[in-house]
Image (cartoon, rainbow, N blue to C red; front, side, top):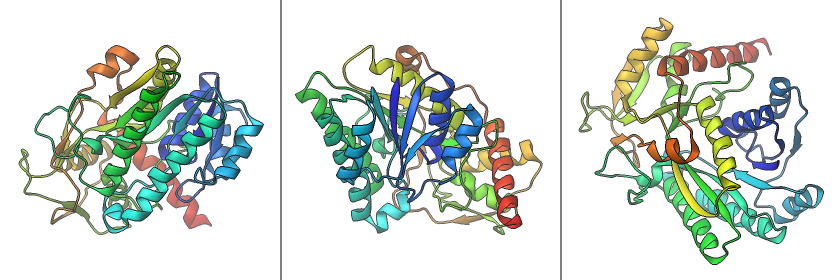
Length: 338
């Protein structure tokens, strides 16, 4: 199949692109490179042995996006494009609604124009927000608590309305929990130079001496050790989930949503302990107040994905910690050499 990957130069998009090519699919990447890496297409080509067709195109630029659709006949689209920082979205809500929601509508309009009606949307567990039910199932009510999360929820609703209006559409929402780690080749991973709300890049920077200590935001949550609990999933497992979801697009129609996580919650302090034990590096910590928009506990019920998509996360937290450190250390060495 020929798949358009919007935002394919980003962390999750690049891993999914490599996984899809390795399974025999043809891909085309469109990325504005606002947050994606210009080196990603070459790295994916090195991993897979196949040249990647890449266009530096923002999906909100309808004219440029149409030009890509004119050149290629796509069977489906995976949309990773957008901004993804909870704290940044609180400060810059309009940027998030423009870059995430408006751009997604532009993409869907172009898909409609060119008769491409199969889409996987890169959503987020943040759409659940504060929820009394744990683990979170896909049937849980959505209650997003930040502009970032609301932008993801809005796009889900727009796609749901589209599927309800036209039964030719097939759409899968993948609600990610907390992706960490790097590709086994160490050619792609989470760029340590890009500012992030995610905990792992900050652990890594502390481990490598770029930060004097790790700020832990919130120690008064109603959890076992007072720190927030999250569901951390290896990026390679997440990429494989998209392959399974792609298969689902061509065997069903309508709108579906699936959680992609491990089904296990891990507190921030527990993650720090596992990192220290698996790498041998001590992480000094500083206890800080909660951040706006954060929730205390968030982990997945993955039984629906296991049953319907026949997918299950396999990598351990130790694997995630070691590969994250190895990739970041390598990237920082490259920076120092330059």
